Length: 206
Image (cartoon, rainbow, N blue to C red; front, side, top):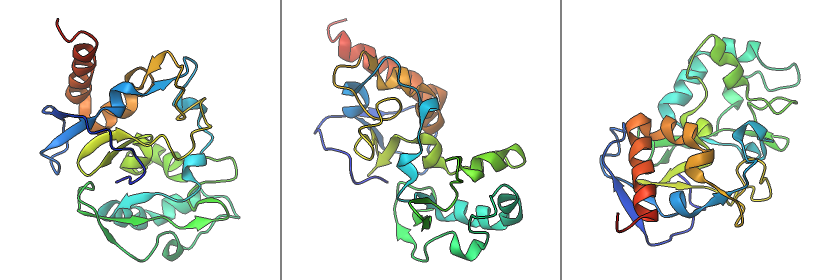
């Protein structure tokens, strides 16, 4: 899904996730090695990660288009209200998405078409009426899956250390800061497996 994550050469097979389209999923070393500031929280997101648009599963795009009237009700007057202008036309092959294909959202100004002037995602706002409308990887960021490998995209806005930017001197791990995002991606059992792997790395002889 992301092509900006480094290749550390180390990965750990995951056996207890709920992603049926990825039966062979691995966790990259970045999941365990990356550090964040103790004050880091995804609640502090400035939405800079949305400035280039996002990739959405093809089938989820179709759901958003079916629910266009609901989405428009949550948009500001200055946002693009024409659903035909919300997504790029090209569908890309990508096995990290459930349908095997993804499509990018259009960028209006300097941000995703679904981001309002207060940097709020209107798809997330619309979830009060349609749970799960916010795309899977948008909710997961900076947790991503690239070539069936669970990893972190920390290069998109590295200066944002209050949220998804890493801090080499930080005292918090990715599993500390991003537990919600990891559970969203791999489920409760998957998160517990990641936590067990993290403990095993700290105590290799235990």
